[in-house]
Image 1: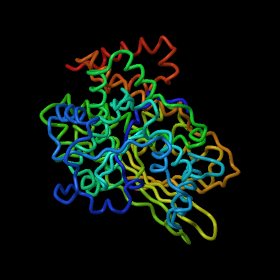
Image 2: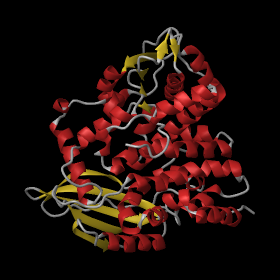
Image 3: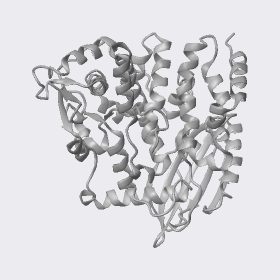
Image 4: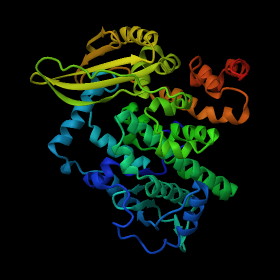
Amino acid sequence: MTPIVRRVVVGAVALSVLAGGSWVLGEWQPFAYDWPEEWDVRVAELAEYVEEQAEFSFEHAVRSRFLPDKEFEKLITDDGQDLSDEDRDYYEATGRLLRSLGLADGELDLFEDQNALNASGILAYYSPEEREMVIRTNPDDIVDGELSPALRATVVHELVHALQDQRFGLIRMRERAKDSGQDEALTVLIEGHALAIESKYTSDNFSDEEQSQYDEAMEGGDDPAVDEVPEIMSAQQLSPYVFGPTFVEALERKGDDALIEAFMKRQPKSLEQTILPSKYFAKDDPERIEKPRRPERSKLAVSGQISQLDLFFLLVRTRGAPEALRLSDLWGNGSFAGFNVGDDDFCAVLNLRGETDGATEELRLAFDEWAKLPGLRSAKITGHDEYFSIEACDPGPKVAIELPSEVDTRQMFWRSSDIPYIWRSEPTTDAECVATGVYTELTTEEVENDERAIERYNQLIADCRRD
């Protein structure tokens, strides 16, 4: 798959899939682990750089493992034979949920889809369970004990995660998340911080030739298996690495220890607050939302929160990418549930509200149109006092529908990536206002190729100027 943006998924914190059940007791316990006495010599100088940039120090050295590509891939992908019945039921229910909502079609195997995303997109990870970094390597990545430029940057990224864990206790942070939406927001914060220091490292230390090598490594290659993955899954996996740098730069620009406070005292509560950082600073917290009601003769199969990103994908076929982006900014909160109904049916129920009563009504009207899309089955919208419900059932694997695409994903991602550029180039202008104005009016193709984009951009710079 051609990358939507420069491939920045250089590393990850190992979460539920990689870390397993031991995470339950995995908060920071400096005296309860057999730490290495000293740093790997290939890593020591990079650890010093990370301490300098983060402005706090490691309590202990961290073990690092450099694995050949095939060995690394075995660690980050799962064997289907090891799946429990509960795991299989979860993957099947999630696939049927996506089909019910028009976000996927055909025969689905989300287990293999997730494996494909992990194999193609993860270059390294830090495991709080094992207190170690594991880094994927190719034959030319380590020569005479020296790490290649791209590998050094990858190690810097993972060292930031190790330092975060020692300072903040990453597992404890996630255990305290109130819902899946806050957990997503924490991932954005964690990855954004690591990417910020990684980016600083490359700009401080790389020659032009090394930067080119690094950029090439980050681009990755095309993987046919990833082409089959529903776009919403690809976007969800990539989103922390797109929203994260913008959110963290907003915190750093705020000053007054705002970044440290976001880790310790005032964590973001929703993905929305990281997509548009002004909502975090304004304390625009999620609205209260009811959980979906169970239909008759049904059993709950899967449930969670509808995020702003999910809302965008739900509406992009109905209203097009610019308008779907505008509507997604009205997100107040959302909850979804998928139910096994009767002998072999499956239906999804969503409760959704905007950040105001007017926003809720505008979203409801958009979903009235959504319910008429071809390919949906038994779709209906029901209004309530503070929210509305969306219901739809699985049309089955034989129904083909028009799905959200990689081009649609660009609409939200490009806006987020443009905000920092506007901060730097137009410091007296509200960057969110400018970027939102551009991307809620013009498609990404128009932004690239239409002269109106330049005219509108310049007009918005003036219109959005701060007093």
